[in-house]
Image 1 (tube, rainbow, N blue to C red):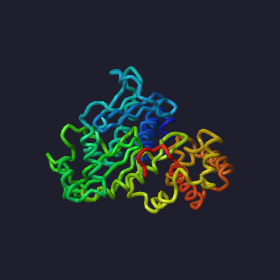
Image 2: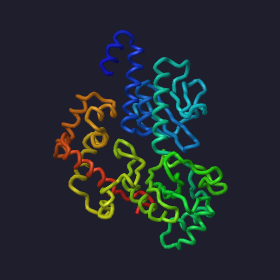
Image 3: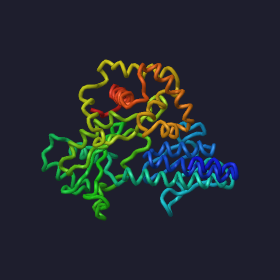
Image 4: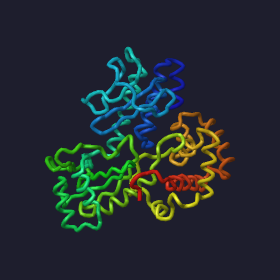
Length: 359
């Protein structure tokens, strides 16, 4: 496909650019990329800022022309090219380019929207109960408290609109917010209408919160939510800011941690940094691109895939890794070296102390 795109570019530059955009977003979907990576791709491919805003899901992601995350700016302009991520819905993905839409813009918007839909489908944003007021907050605390009796938790669950006999999972957010999300009893089965887990007057929020780190607990019977809450708090400690100096996932699912969860019990803010963590910190000080490059290597199926995710040439990635290895003191070109690097990133996140509610 890449060779075809090159040949097509020689004949028709616009068609070649469009095909490269299709390939780019297909690879993001294959790599299970997050929303920020998708919006960043739209900005880099078109050369203009891009934004994704979905109020219903609590999503707001804006990326500038350099691919950097930025704070929420002005309201979207009606003249900007836009597309709805949800078919038939209002525009939610924009390119900040006034004027008529170009051929490449149209392809980028279409493929980026499809990638966003794939991300939403994969993460399964469903209605949740959130502690928006004192009464609900107290009820959720009881529901997640292992010291509360099963009878009390059953009563509170019913008050919050949760089926005591159903499944749910807890979510721990970096600002201390606790959420409880109902989970269908089996794949493809949605909650029964009128039984959604949203207490009266509460705001419907998604499982994935774009602007806050989130630890997601496993699905358990409602009366066993304290165990899901504890796992969610552990998962929260493995989240990252998603920035150049703190790259990594903003949302972590506890049931995907595996043996890494064991590290959480042994490592904390007061634990002396491991030598490999110190090496990562030296790498962070050596160059602004260093940590993002290394993190991409640990999460991509191949070095070529990492280069695509970073939007750099394969040879550029190789040069960066050569510099990084000199700072780290070990090779990241072999499986053992990448495993060591992955563990170093995990340990580095566990050393943080500023995440509220992460026990």
